[in-house]
Length: 415
Image (cartoon, rainbow, N blue to C red; front, side, top):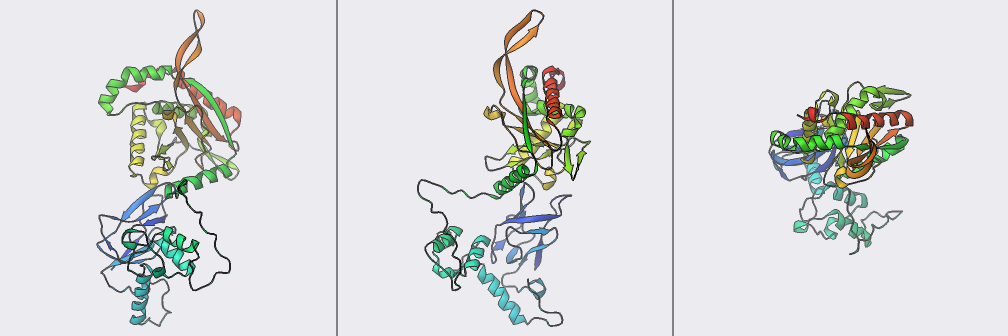
């Protein structure tokens, strides 16, 4: 028999949230398949069983947060009895619980995790059944092999199904889904994204400022080095690393955008750790951190951004990938957006959005006076926390970022 404990998923992580159980009590589990998912601030991680065997007990329901090292489940041999010390309600001190009682309770726990036909029940289904005191034999399951799904329980309740215990206040029936609508439940990542966004808007008074930047020098550097870069690095060089490099340089002159609020003080960070917003196939948004981005050359920064983005899309990020961020950049320009008002990544005080870069007619000055030229132009939009900085400071920072983008000889930096 073996305890399954909440793992230490990162150096800075002290607790974890069990988001999903992939097995039910009585199922055979393997070290090669996930047993449960653990959620941190913005990432889900699959945790395999530590040993082969039968899942004897789930000690922590999905949705609960427990400290690292806490027992979340017990694995053993099929039919093996769980010692009294592992039970949720241990016997009184000095009075060991009879073996028959332990065996009976173990059987009861196992029975509660399966329906009348022996099919496993998910934690959500078990919770609904327990809350409404339902008899599983009265519910028609639509899952594989007649397994009862959450929708089956909700449908049963909607048509008047009830347990033996009457409820003084009837629960509202779930919304009826017709052929013209579709209900898409939030996955765990979407829930966490939603919670974070609502919390950020409630915490920080957001202000948006934007500037247009001429990306002509950047575009020429990309065009002149694209073939050599692709052959050397194995991927194409987009606009994001150039903007990230400009942001890191501008922060030296305007460090208060690289900060967070604590009480009535502004904590300004010396390190520049850039959060890079990554979309996960429209299912949610994460912002893994490129640490010490200001110490990287442009090629190093491009590689680091690509590396964390690829790991994000492959679900291979760890909780430590989300720590110590000081400023965040979001790039929606690939979709041709005109201007985006990003939501601040708490507890930071500012976030920059890169929008679509398109060719536009602009007025240029030269020795012959003014003329009209076609240049690649894009909008840089910054949302900032007005508690931390004022509009003039934010505008000056954006002006500096634009200046760096427009005047740097990028061709000598790319190689």
